[in-house]
Length: 297
Image 1 (cartoon, rainbow, N blue to C red):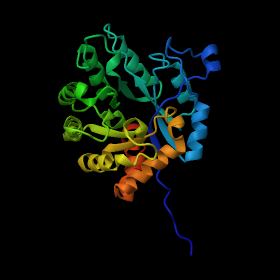
Image 2: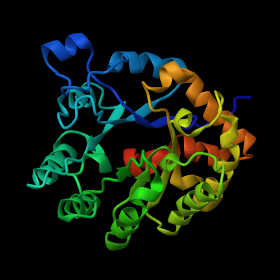
Image 3: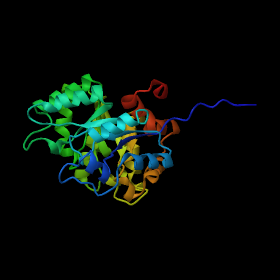
Image 4: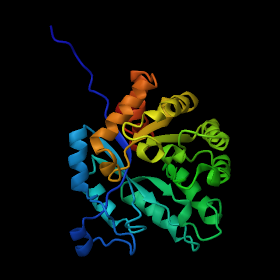
């Protein structure tokens, strides 16, 4: 007797990058001076890795290698519209031109999210300046989540994130790479990690369980992150957490397929249920970025 099975939930990588190959850069998509990549990161290489790993779709985050020139990523989004959406890089230029660029990328070119890199703001300026607030508010009106890259530590940017969340509660926030919180080793680190958990009080805040190699203190499969995963899931709920690989940086660290497998192992180790794991591995990203109702129902 035949049994009907529903389609398996899609696996969505919520955080990765692509950039032009050296040949593509020479012909059409130049790198930003001084930001020439040392790793291959072209779209065809990514697609090979995704196929081998069984990853269905991904959010491409504009790489620093092309800075504010989104032409290469845009070409990839147009070539593979069913596979990728884009996350543009916010340009905090003081003349405000970045607001219009962001709006154009979202409205016309297939971008569904925006990245705030605080280290690109003019010297002495915060993400809560006039331009930052204008971009954050506009992103909310356009339904585009804003991702924060707190590479130098969540504590340095916490007050800015809290101010923006308080003033603009309709803008969804993504904290890249567990907000760069490593397993705490001392009181100060415990305090910062507690602040990450406390940001869950803002319903608009989501966490990317991404780039495990950047936050783990151990080699692959990064088993020291089990306790962090347990606490983050407990605070936020699985439907506010999404997996991401950080391709292509992850490839020399452990491999793309292995990055996905490491997350599955961590979720099992942390005793996360299969339904919660489905949210983390795809449903969350689908609901707030890809927005395919059939998957997020």
